[in-house]
Amino acid sequence: MTFSASGFLFVFAMIRGNDDGWSSSLIVGLLVVASALIVIFVVAELKQKEPMLDLNLFKRPAMTGVSLAAFAISASIFAMFLYLTLFIQDDLGYGALASGVRFLPLTALAFIVAPVAGKLTVRVHARYMLGSGLLLIAAGLFTMGFTHANSTWTVLLPGFILAGVGIGAVNPVLASSAISVVPPKEAAWPRGQQHLSPSRHRDGHRGLGSVFQSQLEKKTVQALRVSHTGTAISFHGGAQLRAAVLGGDVRHLAASLPGPDRIILLNAYRSGFSSSLNTIVFIASIIALAGSIGSFALVRQRDFVPSVAPKSH
Image 1: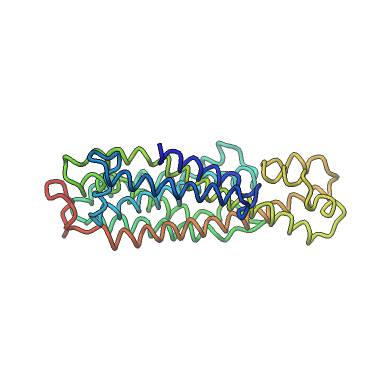
Image 2: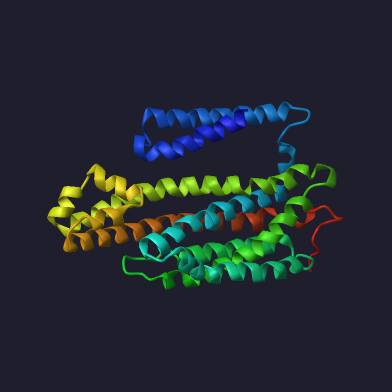
């Protein structure tokens, strides 16, 4: 109950933060209560004979490292899929099928590399697979962070290739490592932990989404200020522009404007979108890098259960 309530309050704060202000009493109160509830949850779990979450599992550094890797991949590249899709569809104007085709370098490489990585786990230690894979994801995300108002989808291609290889290297190793770092009789929770991946994805998406929304509105308005046009001044700070930006309906709003003003608004939106995308891509890159460092440092060979542990060189 305390864990669920904490998660609900935290997510609600993430959703309302931009509208109510991050320093408002409501948002600060929600975050304080969410933090208090998670502390209560941890204390209660430590006192339970049969806890829902056995915190003793994290006495093994490898368990912490694997959990960090799982969070990092979900909160970085997987959370970025939505915004990369929006960039290709909403900002560049491609349809759903055309967007899917442009994602093929990433998805195809992930599928091709995954079985190879799975076979390598019997010869290469998990720490190197997880750490190297997340490092490739971090590098891929970093290279995606240089879009601008006139960018085409190919600006993402080098990053798609690096991230696709990284995803393929991490996913199969992550699944096997979560089971291998604990004795078989205690493996129920790590096995169930794999089902939490969608939750980690949603949490990462909401966190990046809060940053993206605030940056998108701010930077689109800044770009309109630079234009010094009547339309830009009339929209500046207006509810109509704000609703269109946050609702992804700028093209519909632009369609109601005369030709020159329509171009000005769309250019400002593309500039704001690209700049905001760059910001959250760099944040996601740092998350993946932290996961890589944690994997190299914490996923130790001696923590693996001998009967199922990957063999090292």
